[in-house]
Length: 408
Image 1 (cartoon, rainbow, N blue to C red):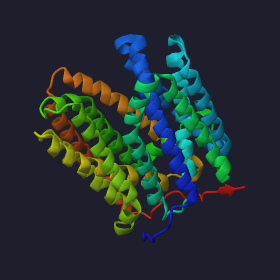
Image 2: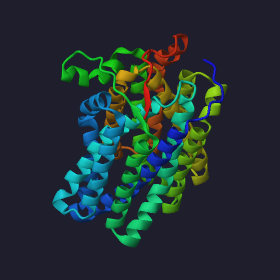
Image 3: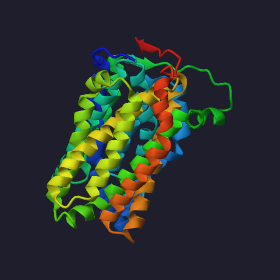
């Protein structure tokens, strides 16, 4: 497939900016909620807040995906963002007893909004613009991810718990305006004839039946689990073998985000020079395996910083090519359910990584855990990458339904 030099539509740029602003607000609010959970619920408070924010993403995936594929995107996104904004206001003045339920309600909104935004963006771009659009969204979120912890800590330390949550509510209000102002929508295509339950599980079934999607999701979850385990142990690794402090820890986290940001900004150029998402996905997987292994062999902060720049770039390459392949192989009428199913798989991998990382720390040193994660990733890539690479020989997209964009 050849790629020209298409410009990303203004609507997608606006969505990327709005979602980045909202993600920044989420990061700021998360810092406040974690500290409040620790203060009011004791040592288990942080884990309880994280669990309340993660479980709805898994539990609601089938329902959320079906909702995205059955309801027009504009009213669904506006309503969801407004509910999330109101929930943030409630969280700002919530009692200890209502803290976790409100966090769970906020996560329910994310379970719906995330696949809805993804599905909307896919109908606003053509196939040639897709890699650049996915890269733009990743770059915007990476930039917000770099700023989020700093801004959140600053606001929390200066103003207390209330202002970070009010700020998040304001960002949700701004995000709700975007589909209305842009007058864009995604019209659902009613093609399903099965029961509500079977229709809700179509996304999972689509992934299970398609060997390429199945391999993509298996590899993505394995790599997310590996990176998640590394995140669990990296604090001990950085402050122990690398002899660094809080500044060094922050530096390494920023390095990975910068690598992702650089690849996201270059996604259009990369896709034109290497017009093969399967090969780019495989290259990113190999890059992650190699750099995580090298990280486990480092003995200085600056070596680790250099490696994590490349790790972030490889991670960005995996994310962008994964998003392109997932979109191209998912018909528009089921895309919301496929995106929701992937979101559930990613959430499960993130939860598993925290459990696995904590358990491994009871028996192994951080360096050994990182090296073991790299070895496990190599095995996963070697075992599952073949169907992805064979996708290059197929006709391209198996999504034959033409997307419908409404601007009215």
